[in-house]
Amino acid sequence: MTPSPLPEALPEHRVILENTDWASLMAPQESGGFLPEALMRLLDADPAVRAAAAEEALIGHQNTIYEATVPVARFVAAILDHPAVAAGEDETAAHGSASRPPTRAVLLKWLDDTAFDADDETVTCGNRACQGRYLDMHVDLKAFRDLRPWLFRAVRPFLDADDPAVRDAAVLAAIPLAEHPDLTGHHDELAARARHLLATRTDRYTRDRALDALESWGHDISALESPDDIEARETWRRRMSIRLFLVRGWLGRMPGCLSTRNLRGVGPVGPVGRGFR
Image (cartoon, rainbow, N blue to C red):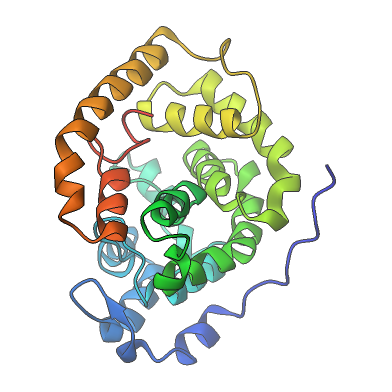
């Protein structure tokens, strides 16, 4: 399938920063008034300052998309290719003191996590409990989903990054973003990259995401699964069966959308699909 043309690039990061009423937007436990300063520190020349800024600015709590999530995502996408994002990292590595991932990989990982929290499975689970009205009741999540083509445009150049940490993070971020109907033409490209991840990575998180993507795109993954992959999948299924039995009464006492999201978002040993598929 020929990929559809990607949208125009997002505005320059300072335009996004200045044209957003941050104080009026909710972030976890407070308004987003603190975000402009924190976001700008993501462009500091010191990698340590950027790492601290990421802890503050890349908002997220309990798999929730907040009012401030979309403008933060737009800002992050706008600075992905900014030279300042990588400032000082080569020098740190040269002195043997690189104890943190590249800032660009951290930004991509946040886009990956957020896109996963807004993916099609989340909506499907929510619609079951909300009579098909999940997106009507979660407008911030819908707004993030609508933004996916623009985020994918920003992520795509890093699918060929020289740094393997950045390259792999870009692939993992692109996978959930490419669920958008306008991006299905990129699945073949991403499938080849997912197969490369399976050939080079052994961590559970990466392998689960790559296998899930390939399976959802209609690929036969039987020859790609390792014995550990199969054991993880079967263990997850057993534990989820027990969990579903235990929470059946609990679900009946909670608002449907909340309970379904919590069940999908928190699995028996962590987030579903991030430890066990």
